[in-house]
Length: 143
Image (cartoon, rainbow, N blue to C red):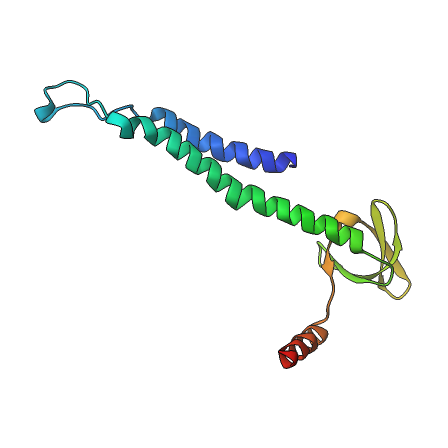
């Protein structure tokens, strides 16, 4: 996990932790309870750990799992890159791969215009809209 993702998790936990610690163990007594403190029972003892467990589950299912899936997908894309593939970069530049290195890719973005990018900056393979709709129509006909 990258440091920026950890910082996000720590920030979310840091914002929620003061609210958890500020909660009183039981509701203040008063009225017909004789002026003493209210015991809270088992519900009061279980509320905070259950809330913490729910917060950890939320962070895992809605932040960590999607990030790990995205990381796996990016690594699989990087392994599948080959010369001649048309790709899109994070900045939206469309180009054809003319050279591959361990950590960088050379793209031809116009005739005789080549630019080097890091492999991580390649977001996806490029499929023009006309080809994508033709492929989808062909798949629908087969069904």
